Length: 69
Image 1 (cartoon, rainbow, N blue to C red):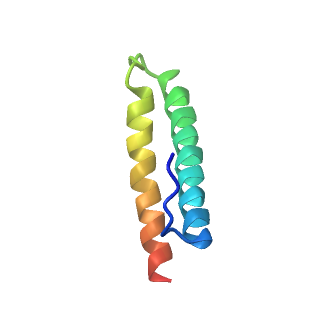
Image 2 (spheres, helix red, strand yellow):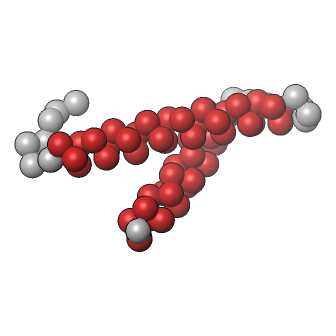
């Protein structure tokens, strides 16, 4: 990863915070979907992709709320 010289320490910190949040929410979504798979006979080949997309939508909503504050 190349360091952007125009990026302030605060901007870098916030970017890393958003990346960590996305990863954490993705793991929660994966865990939820795995739990649901036990209740139904669904193939899990796209489990990671579907979880990441859900996490991106959740995090986008969180970031929108944060931006308004």
